[in-house]
Length: 335
Image 1 (cartoon, helix red, strand yellow):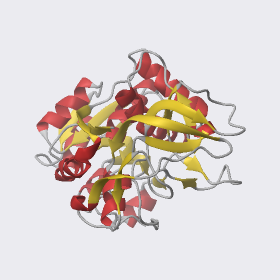
Image 2 (cartoon, rainbow, N blue to C red):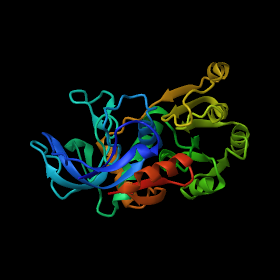
Image 3 (cartoon, rainbow, N blue to C red):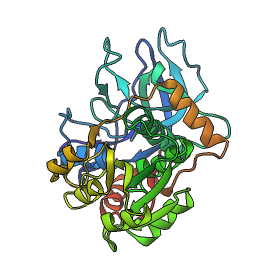
Image 4 (cartoon, one colour):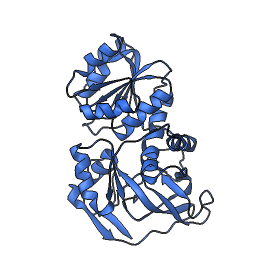
């Protein structure tokens, strides 16, 4: 099969389309003929550059969220059938269903390939009305956003939530999940076009944090009160404290992502005087959450932002585009 292989960490040019042996599904696994896989800033670009905290065995194939068609079923994999349309998320460690995830494209070969194997229980059925690219983006981000806001931040109807990176994959999902939970949403992004895209997804207000003071703008929108929840996935040393300062008393900041640097200042005095909670989480979405998010997208209740779809042999250029932050929405690779 064709696969994009990295044999050393480095710039996008370390990604090469190669002929490699096609995998076969083991016990409890399915073989997916990949139709779409997205390019993720942290789980693809950072892994490729060698800056991701988890060790990666080389040679390696990236791609954490492939969708496609089940081409073969391994022994005991009764959950799926040949010909089904599916999308894969993470892969749990064997024997530890509640432990840390083993990620496709990080701990094992991922979906930058014509074929990939995954445990059958991690391959989720795609509704007939949903295309592969949309399914990939929804499954990657919407269940995580749902878990972060519902389970960790415990967002309540009527509360204000500030969504950072609002036109990105996780941010755009966060806007729609927050609205579904009955919250009022302020979408923060780094360009007017991205703010507009976020407003089109249902945000009540928007802030261009490159052109405006984020804290002042949020306080003005909320009549000086601040927001109840900050939905954060950037960890930029300048933006993080501005978002933190926009929290109201008893506010919660939930974060999953660090592509803005990861080391940020924290006003501890404000933390304890206002009773603020800071939560780090990648979510704990279950199969029912994934199915619900895919169903919402199929029914038109959840939309995704896709910047462009590119062929698999353009993976290096796709990484450059994502790294330059020149688009709005996800970049998709299509074998």
